[in-house]
Amino acid sequence: MIFLLGGMLMVAGAGCYVMMWQQRVVCWIFLVGSVMFSLMQTMQVYTGTELVLRRLKNIQGLASLLFVISGVLMADSAYGFFRPMFDNITDYIEIVYNKWVVLLLVAALLEVYTTHRINNELSKKNLKE
Image 1 (tube, helix red, strand yellow):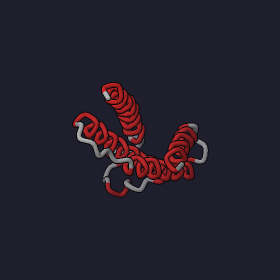
Image 2 (cartoon, one colour):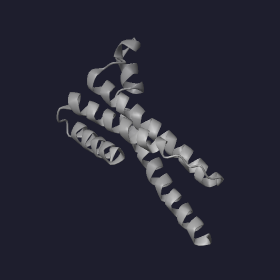
Image 3 (tube, rainbow, N blue to C red):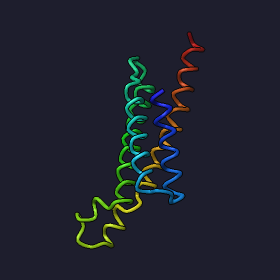
């Protein structure tokens, strides 16, 4: 339940942020959703011995981390938390500002890939048994 709620909050937060509706509020909704989603996903451990499935779960862990970092960067884009760390605003814009989009895209692609592959590997394993 928490996993699904986290996913829905992520989608709603990212969608509203992109549509520029209450960006200072929905960035926190996205961040809370990504933390909920990531925590529930990392609690789903694979205790088997197959190397492929263990590797895919590790990649999912990386995707979860990228979701949370993208939430932090989304909040930074709304509030400018990291702006004082840079002497020049151009450097801040080139390095940090709105880079949450890239991390979110990479995390989403990794998540789709690993979910598909894990499902595929588990169905192959069930066919063998």
